[in-house]
Length: 147
Image 1 (cartoon, rainbow, N blue to C red):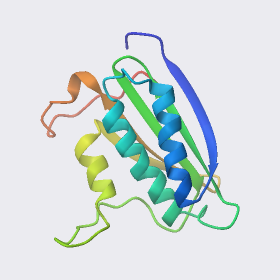
Image 2 (cartoon, rainbow, N blue to C red; image 1 turned 180 degrees about the vertical axis):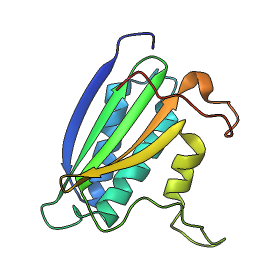
Image 3 (cartoon, rainbow, N blue to C red; image 1 turned 120 degrees about the vertical axis):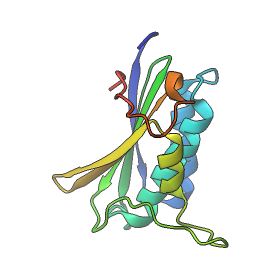
Image 4 (cartoon, rainbow, N blue to C red; image 1 turned 180 degrees about the horizontal axis):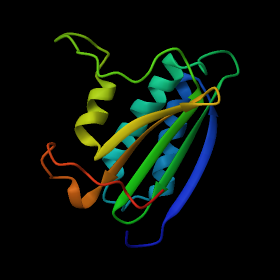
């Protein structure tokens, strides 16, 4: 990875109106000139929204932690919450459905994504690599060095 790497985290209340704050945080960490900014903000919003709506943090006083690790050509965003009963799933979205598309966007636009569970917490993450943005989805994409 070239360029200086940064890694910052913020903890927010698990409220729908806080998704905007999480997106703003990610934007400040990346900076306006980062080549992956737009996609990173879109996907971060999707992960935080899922966490706020579907995790064990979706209770009064629940919290979500957003971590952004970035370099010039790589971004990794992690969203950690209290683990709920489910796991991230690529649900089929009906033609007129207003939901169920978030993880499909993550799957389509991220170089890699996944989730980890343990100790009562769940972390869902994605990575973006600028140099592989146009790579066919059938390629196996190596992990980023920005962790």
